[in-house]
Image (cartoon, rainbow, N blue to C red; front, top):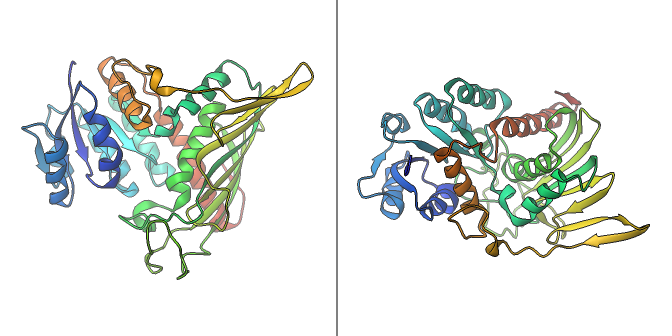
Length: 359
């Protein structure tokens, strides 16, 4: 396979903001099919990113009938991730599905099972792993720098940045608010660096405290309180089977100044680290405390052959296409994304019941 033929299902915000611009930068990719329930979106995507003979659909199943398509990118609202991905895998396509994997663990498990059954590759769009800082911390963790990582904090906190477009505020379509939208990135990043995917139990809380506020000061304009059916913030405390604990913080709107998004803090027996201000590693050496702040210059490092970019989305796309062409393992495994979805579901369930959720 020299050129990968790709079909895009869902031509809205995430497709235009991430997937299609990133794929367009790769020399061995052709976007040959576009599908959206709003035909005008698919037509515009074809005009902006498609090959000369690209097709346009409003029914994704028609797109999947095209046997020349190698890969499908699923860029739809969360509720439809599972069934579209399963259908695409069963149609013989490799699938990149935008995060989160699914709205709950049962739907995510269907995706995982379909990938195993068909032998096709499945990955989930957690591009935060591809930042220079995350890559550096992962390498340090693999080298044993931190020792046994037993505490971590996964953070995705905004002061007032509620997304007011699309279906972000619709609980039915999305399955939740900031926890499943941006908290999922921080949790994925933290579990990946820890290399720990065995949760034991969790406790969660979620809040609808600011949804009905009319004094909003929101970065993306006014939200409609009547349509704001998801939580505005959610928090979880997760205990892993080996005793490690993770605090997960997520909010679109919170009265605070110390905002951070898609970031992590880890503490191990030998050293700790965070991504709060670049990469900061701390520890004890020669009986003296030290702080290491490596200088990272991702534009000067060829993360993947043929791509010279610091954009995590482009790097993500490049490693994914490389995995397809050369039959490699993609960076984000579906089993890992499944665990992320299980934990998010556990936090939501605990918040709703007021009880501990046991995995």
